[in-house]
Length: 257
Length: 318
Image: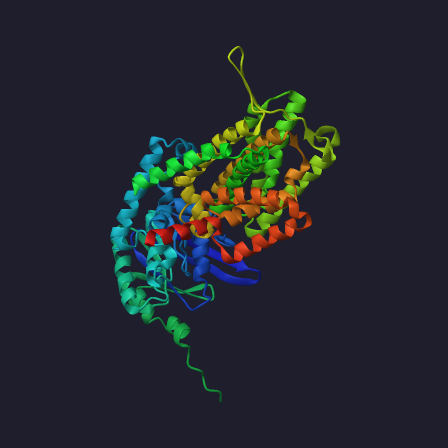
């Protein structure tokens, strides 16, 4: 069964169609790239998938179930976790606390267990601790555990965003421009991380302007322009797709006679 | 380190227990007791504002509701302090839910103003439903708490020293509840909402639910503080939800240090004691009050608690 299905999704802001009749699907375990010029509707599509914005028309299905009428936290609790285009972390908390928050949806003891310090509370604390350690190991960020998030370098903050998302145990991970602002070395590191995440059986949809990254790691690419899907295919197909080239490089101007 | 910490704790406990005995005057002891009551109130506000991160301007409404719950209970049903101590937080909690349900969907200044509007509504009712609340006169003659076990104990909290220890016990209870809730799974949810509400929602935290839980618990804390206030001062009046208390408790929490447990405690003590001693300055009182607030926001953005931490750091480095 398809992991995610976007069916005829349109989203209007007043008279402007940020998305119109977008269709595509993700199979479990694959990495799909979502590209397009600025303003093509990529982030809007992310917002629609994760419930922060409702589609004006059409539906989003996850594992065969309609999710477009759910609240963002409900969608997250199905295992669809996103990151943001602009660095989005919990700035004054430590790295460990940041990751612990991501872990929040795993185990939910109530208020009473916190007040009375019941076994459920202690178990949850311990699991959270193990979870933090595991994520830090996975991203080789152990050294940063007790750093305040806002004191990390930009590159490490972006890495922390992924750590928070992973801590929420995604089945489908949506990355919004994870390489934005990273230097080449950090970008290479990011590619490896994304590959490693895929090896864990997590389906990934990534919005990115960094073409090298997209072409290398994505199995399939969806291209948006002015809210419409103009192409879909393998990296090789996309690179040779006439309309995509037109959108990215412009077209030859016919000479006026 | 651990040993030092226990020693420090022991010293704090001893100081707290011995403190009122060092003052002979009833007036000084009275200031200690009212500081204690405001510690309760500012811990409640801090619970919402410092940890969950929303600013409820109308917060003293819960203080007033708690005071009126026990006052009206006493007047019409003859209930005592201990019943009020249970009933006040329940009533305040219910109002917290009713006020929170529409207003917690808003953020930042919108939320702040809507809670203020609710406080204004409650103030209007308390002032104008004279047949029920006695209007702006307030309800006086609320009795001191008693512990009576027939034939064994007949104890009345009728002077400042007895009150002091009662309030200390309740403060300790508040601090324990605050500490346990904040250092838990729930506390993490509130910090997440304070720091980045959208991201919290994106990782699966039901932000509205957690904001509501925090708001209701904070309201209950305010309600209980109101009940204690009413029985200590033996009066409940509409002033309790008015502007004076809004400025005072916000000053206590902000200047003390938001999002810490020590901060509101220090702030409450400072802002109970200073205005009392400034009484001599009469008309200049509020001006001085405002000046302290302004200067401390400029020079101590982390509040008194931040100052304490800086000093501690400096000693550690030596």
